[in-house]
Length: 163
Image 1 (cartoon, rainbow, N blue to C red):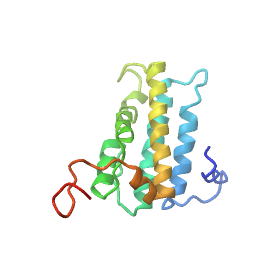
Image 2: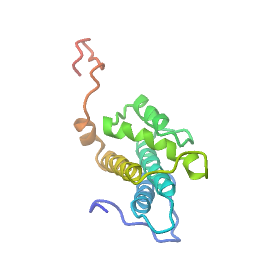
Image 3: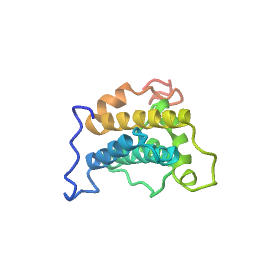
């Protein structure tokens, strides 16, 4: 866990659903579970945890910015809500929308093909990118926006394309 992350709350401590750092703690918890293959645990379940880590991390950013969000598991939808409200995720975070496939179907027998080791590793890596980005957004949103690449289609007030 990064040094600037808050430690997990006590198991029975009250957890504030309006606190973005609580959402980040939950995201980190899911990420730890996703990263820990155990005998007898399906890779699909670990990929679900990777998806949940990314989802909770994105919701932490939305909560930190006071942006209402839909109760959905679709990461592309959540990132679209963020973008419409001025929070532009870098391309590697946007790519994590592919984790959405693990939100529902892969958790049930026979709906999708079994997850491979490579797919599991990729899912965990994508979730890690999203959680790291979300932590930067929540802890220092101005710095991270400056580090994000500008949308080449965004135009400045003078119409020149500069902002």
